[in-house]
Image (cartoon, rainbow, N blue to C red; front, side, top):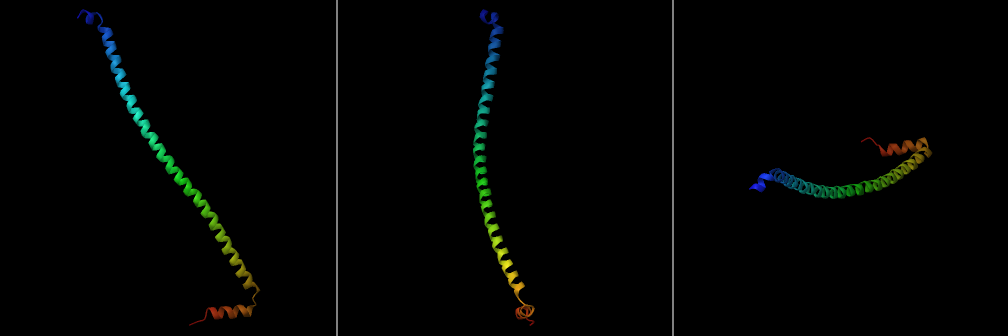
Length: 103
């Protein structure tokens, strides 16, 4: 008992330090769990990002294909315009009268 009376401050200080140690250890464990959860979330977001990047890349390929289709259509349109420009007026009248007859 005399030991406790003589060293009560030291025992109290040790108790407080043990409490602080246990408390900080608990917080550390919680933070480690949060870090692991965030790492998993990061991995998932990287996967989603890669999927979206692949989709964007495929869209840029589609854009190139669409541009080629547009060029083809414009070329076809230009051919038809040149053909119409070379037709005489009477040929044009006959073409449109046959095409758009009144019924």
